[in-house]
Image 1: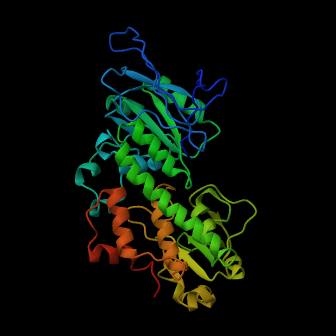
Image 2: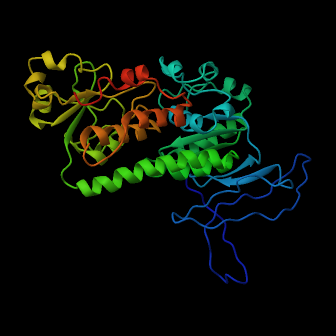
Image 3: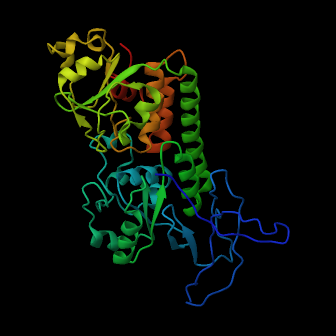
Length: 386
């Protein structure tokens, strides 16, 4: 899901009839209920036909501004936003990294071990539920927390306009959608930083996601068709797989030859269920086990241990504290997954210092203190080359 802004056509004597697609912030009614005409600030269009909104309102700025979200909806937002609510866990993680102290609550409780990295005050935020997935949103509790805006971030669903309009109408709270994918999270952070009046903080996160994604894609282009054949196995029997071409396989497909090729890749985080015989036939060079899967039993299982990935010790467990590095949910945690797979699969092509990179990521996105040796070992003990 990535941020897409639809702008206004600007005209001037110098530009003739040329039309530029820009994000706009339009003066709206002030607190007095009377409209105060103001000149709308403008910025240059980006290469992706998007533009950034004004970073911070001037002293004479209006009380509200008009924002066009990634679904093409025009929504009136306060010009100064201090209280926000996420629509789901993916949005929660993206927003927490940027503006943890502006969150009035959570869509989901943090994972059980999150306290090892996050300040306790964030663990105690009220939980409102989410729009999608379990669809357990407590609208009354959310409204009582009085967020100034509800923000949905992620994949653009076919029902997105109806969904956002429905919540906004029921709650009377501005509700916007910011699209963000693995390749465009940088743009999403730039956008969010300007909406929330935090452009510098957002730039740090934007630069990081752009750096990791660009380094990964550029290096994988050089590797070309010499990708390592990898299987990502889930479940207590290990027979659920994240299939090639699925929404949850984005990082794996980018960085490896995904061994799991099925007719109908599942869009769910639980993946596709297949037979153990099928896994044997795929002959993966490396097997990644999800947490609470077959990792601890694979080397002693009669069938699993016949596979060269198991007998050769090339099987690993995906780190998952506080979130799985390859997804679940498919949010900012996947950038740490890209760094991990770079070092795990192609150590000669990348030059990461893993401990330094893990600590860097956790500091930026989870607001953790620099990791201790014990924390790093706990995270990566089953995830690095034996």
